Image (cartoon, rainbow, N blue to C red):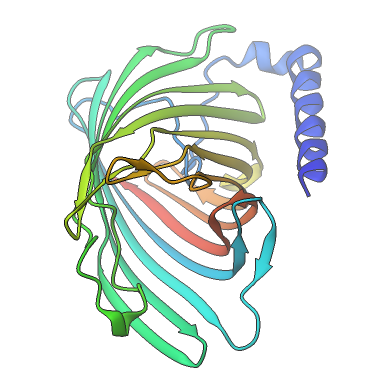
Length: 304
C-alpha cells in the first residue's frame, strides 16, 4: 500500500511540473482563484476577509475494520465484533482583519461497539478547539500563500470515570489542554492547487481517575492536491500523517505506547462563490497503536 501511495504522489508531482513549465496559460492568468472547501484534515493558507463569517458543518461516519498494534501489524476485529462512530462537527471562522482570523470548532459523537457478544452505545461532546491564524505572505509569482497558526485543544469531552457497561465508548476526550503552532502553505498552478501544513502540539499534564498522564508532543502533517474541472467541480487527494511518542503514566514511561498513522483521502467537490461542498473517503493505510478506519465525510462551507 505505501508503494502505491508513493507512486501516485510521484505521478501527481510530475503532472504539476509539466503544468508549471509547459502551460503558458498559467503565466497569463495570475488572478485565477477557484472556490473549494480545501482539505478535510488539513488547512488552506488564505484566511477570511475582514468582517467575513464562514460556517462549516462536517458529518463523519467511521467504520473500524481492525487495529494496528505496536509493531504496525494489522489485526482484523474478527467474528461479529463491530465498532462504528458518527461525528457531527461544526466550525465557525471570522475575519478580524484581512490578515487575521479566529476559528472555533466543536464536535458531537455517537460511538457504537459490539465486542465478544456485548454491545454498547454512547453519545456526547468531544474535545473542542480554538484557532488563531495570521497570513504572513499572499501568493505572488512563485511565492506561495503562507500563514501561521496557533491552536488550543480544550478538554470538553469526557475523559475519566468510565462506565464499565459502556466498554469505553463513553470516553471522548483526553483531559489535557494541547497548545499547538503550525505553518500552512498554498500554491496555485492552474488547474492544480496544492496545500501543505504542519502543526506541532504540546499536551499539558492530565489527571485521569487520579493518575497523572503526560502525553508526548505530537506532529500532524497534511498534504493535499486539488484538480479543478469545469462547472465548479474539483477532485482532491489528501495525505494526513500523525506522529506521537510514548506517554507517561504516574511519571513512568509506557514503552511502545506511541501512536502513528497515515490516512489517504480521495474526494470530489462542487463549489461556487457562496457555497462549497465536498464528499470524501478516508482510509487509515498504515499505523501503530491506532484503529484502522474507513470513513465517509460530507461537508459544506457557507460564507456570510
